[in-house]
Amino acid sequence: MSQDKILLEIRDLHVNYGAIKAIKGINLLVNSGEVVAILGANGAGKTTTLRTISGLLRANSGKIIFDKNDITKTPAYNIVSLGMSHSPEGRRVFGTLSVEENLLMGAYTLKNYDKETLEWIYDILPRLKERKKQLAGTLSGGEQQMLAIGRSIMSKPKLLILDEPSLGLAPVLVKVIFKAIKEISKSGVTVLLVEQNAKAALKLADRGYVLELGKISFEGSSEKLLNSKIIQEAYLGKKR
Image (tube, rainbow, N blue to C red; front, side, top):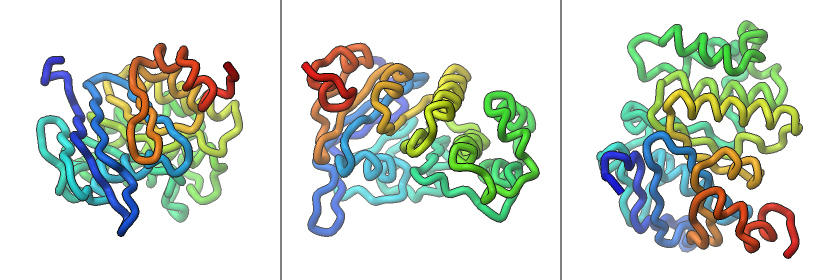
């Protein structure tokens, strides 16, 4: 594979919480323009992997290469400036600020926020435009998730990292969220996605990785994973 296509590369990554080995030597690639999904049960190490990539956790060993830069020891605020944006699990919006103020906070690494980007976010997530003057803390869970994703896009990232964007949402809102992620991908933003809704994630993604107890147990195209009997039984609710 051409090195020019590789946007993110993880090499033999190990992450510990004290004596607990959370990530045990994983290797992972994300190419420019792809949507890549990471699947796995609770406690498999998915969120730890994302938090380590974006600099919120420090790797014990291994390398993280983003856009040809070694960011293994780079602080999170510098990683954002390189073109990576992380929408964490749990939304974490600024409840006492309005929807629009939250969105503008997402552009803090830029000298000036981009009005076209803001309008585009309102186009793909029209609920945010309807609520733009409303305090973020008064939004529903689904609306807060939309806001968290929109805020992550305001920095105009090359790579958008999404941690459980559909967690706890009603099916109708899950469809809205995944439609928006598809539009974000079509705009040229590369997406790395951790998602408990394995079927929806694989239908959206180009490729996927399955984490089990801190190790990658399966990887391949989304079609390959969707058709795998082992994956179907473990993550898609189908019996052999």
